Amino acid sequence: MKTAHRTIVVGDQAFVYWHTSGVRFTLHLSPKEQKNTKIVLVFPAFLPDEDPHTSWTFYEISAQRNGEAACIHLGRPRSIAEIIAHLQHRQPESWQVGQTILIENAWTFLNEMGYSECKPLWKGEF
Image (cartoon, rainbow, N blue to C red):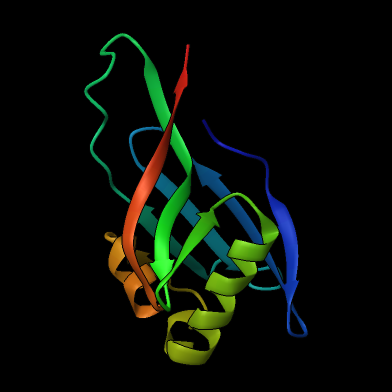
């Protein structure tokens, strides 16, 4: 399932984001003024064994941060803003004009952000 493009402002810069979900969650980020510049984060995951006839998806991730339980909701502006801010500060070269950067295992990216023990919270969709 693909969502509509949404706008978010981080610092003083506007970004557009959208995602596709299913067996893996893919988050697309782009500066609003430079739509040909993109960062794509892919969160691959293994389906639960509970019901093979159910269509599974995830948007939320349970994790640990600084020894405390944390929840990352990949469809909410707060989590999106945190990801964009981290990219701006830690990987500013990722926002080069006209490039698409693909992060195929975004779980390691969450580790860089200080999260550990990240697990998708699966939802069954019939």
